[in-house]
Length: 229
Length: 252
Image (cartoon, rainbow over all chains, first blue to last red; front, side, top):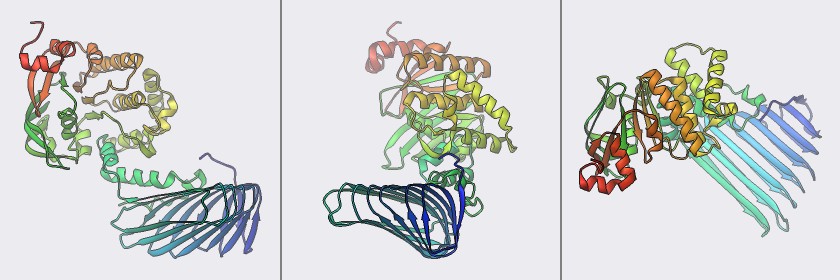
């Protein structure tokens, strides 16, 4: 993901209409975004407000969010017709919290991908992610892919529920979920090159999270918070 | 330098015995070649030297300059100057080769790496190995062919300059031109650094670049026959079975 010139946008209203452009977004209360045209959003979220996004027909959206979760939160996504969207959510959780994502595909010819990467910051933390994808009746030619991964770093708890509710025959819907600790082969590879075990884990952890962030958000990733030590 | 004595190793997964009373000694500047059919434990030896978690040492010792490797972590073993080039180098997402090497140098020297000098060195090695420069800034071995991965591992050797190198089938996946290039680079490294090598291979091509080496045939987890470079020629001409059953070199 390359470095993109972004429009800084601080939202004060409950509803915001975003047209073609690239936005570095900030909001402090529950918000609804209406998307039209080709929109790229980069969002560093510490507020944990609920967010609704509504994709108008023929729009495309790349939504990348770095979320420091410290209370339960909901993301609602409504999709109309002929849209293409990718949601990349990197969630750094502290405490026991639930994140609910509701994806509603209401009409035809949509391609929707959601990629989630999550970790807990402490041993006592537990995150519960519920990702619901709804494909409604009498819709056609929709693609829904949920790629959800959690990395256990402190013997903490990650729960991910990928739910796909399909009420039509003409759809391609897939989900992939992986929850696990560091890959033993990757650790062996890195340490056998001379890296310490601690730094190997730290690099793998940063790579896991950064792989779904744009450069704007990579620079905001709090290295101290995600320190594996 | 490296001495393996009466080594018996089992797989962690199923407790199956892979090596049994295995013995091998490699002195400074020597090249030893392990040959044998597939699945008889050649890669196990390479990984066991590095204390790979998939294997358990039941008996025996592995020492390197009198250090007991069985008691060391892979990090500590690597920092003694030993390098393992895996048969199938894995891909690692989210870490670039340059990032890995910069961090290795930084940790081992306990100082900040001069980025300008580091990049200059990497560029020179890429040119030498005919590797696109951008490969070092790509996630480790990501979307590379088998041959490209082997060259990227060789790049690490040239940068880190180990004294003892384990090459587990470096020649598999290399085309004719790449085999020649890799052979020439290894030959030059051997001469310049006076390094020692443990080579696992099924082919003669890469061995032609080394002046002298000792060959060992493995069967049932131990070395059953050793000889000079003529033994590898015999194996390639007549196969393992003929050399093992006969017990003598065909050209003697």
